[in-house]
Amino acid sequence: MILFTLVDLLFTLYFFALLARVFLPVLGLSPYDPVYQFIYRITEPVLAPIRNVLPSTGAVDFSPLVASILLIIVQRIVRMLLASLLF
Image (cartoon, rainbow, N blue to C red; front, side, top):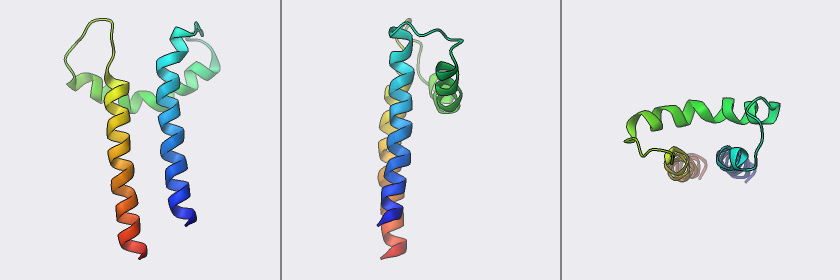
């Protein structure tokens, strides 16, 4: 169904945004770059609350990993709900 494809596409795009958030600083992209700013604006509302709950680990930020795991779980729940409503 097209609805399942759309849901999967949205979750996949957000996953790639989280992945980009991790690798853009490593690649040396300036925080003032418009692409960097866009990725930051769409991922920070999810990462900030997770970062507030996780204990501080110094220089390593595990919030994108936790967000990715939660994203997969939410995606599966949404797919199950859609399946139960449509079939």
